Length: 126
Image (cartoon, rainbow, N blue to C red; front, side, top):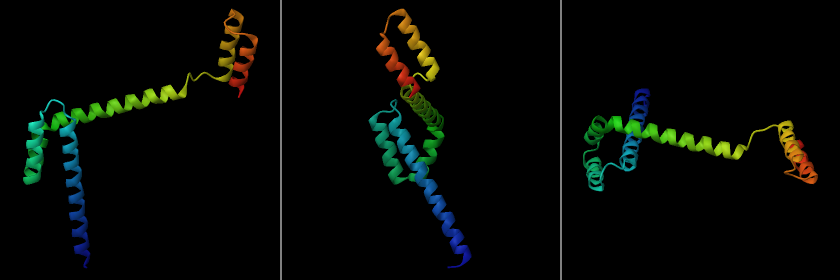
């Protein structure tokens, strides 16, 4: 193999991988969109099978803006879900002295007993 054959192979491989990425992105977007009926989705898929390049270009021209909006909404939703999960796992975030001060306030108000205060204090110091 010559140098230029290797370069041509790399270029063709890159183009094919980009093509596959766009196809899967379009198929994912098509099935993520609730506003499109099942029949229209079937027509798009059949068109992707028989006329892939033309169908991809038409899809990106006709539905490109909505595709980007749905992708942005999905990313925002995933980020919010991740942030909520991190907040729920992280707990209150209060430091040991803050937890002991809150426990002391509860002890002084009579909400907890001395044994419970000692347990909370040991837990905060651990």
